[in-house]
Amino acid sequence: MAPRPLGPLVLALGGAVAVLGSVFFILWKTYFGHGRERRWDPGEAWWGAEPARLPEWDDWDPEDEEDEEPALEELEQREVLVVGLDGSGKSTFLRLLSGRPALEGHVPTWGFNSVRLPTKDFEVDVLEIGGSQNLRFYWKEFVNEVDVLVFVVDSADRMRLPWARQELHKLLDKDPDLPVVVVANKQDLSEAMSVVELQQELGLQAVDSQREIFLLAASIAPAGPGFEEPGTVRIWKLLLELLS
View (cartoon, one colour):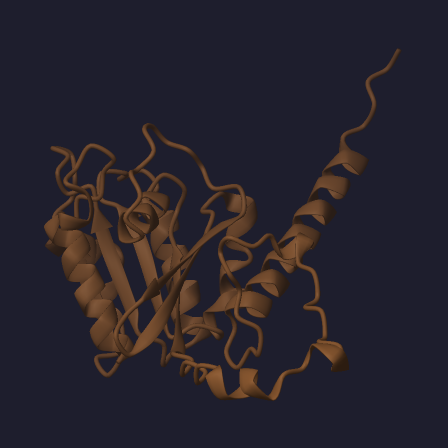
């Protein structure tokens, strides 16, 4: 029997990826977007949420109204998008920020991860989109919806640095006013390029001088010191300054 052509299979997979990306965008904007009315509880499954029961007239007691606590003021939201080629350390960065232990080994993100980090004045919603080639197409769909872009680079992955540069500049062109933090990760490896070398190789010296773009060194690793890693601390402090 002759082998079946791969064309229909490729088309089907491509369509599935497109639909999946649209679903990611809708879900994130529904629960983490600006101006939303409903606040998402991380412990609540969005697909199993039930509407609250309206009180019956017989249940109403005038004294209950007097005892009710005043509603807490809802904090403003800030959105941060974290992208970069697969294996650059994006998921580990998110886990360390949220206080969770990093996973051992390389576990690629097949979709997106998100965390909400409260601060004194606002809440920071951090969204990471997977860095595999079939997901990079969706990065630009989120750029105009966030307040800061974080682009993570594997400083030791010299072979794929041209691809990282290309993807970074696509995003820079998409929103010229968006603040960008480029993270030169894995600086602890002996084969890692220095920050000066990365600035040259990523073409950052050619970026408009009026633009807010930062290049920070980091060593975000599962076996590292976690959130106390100096690079992670610097990145978080810079994000808070940009978001304030």
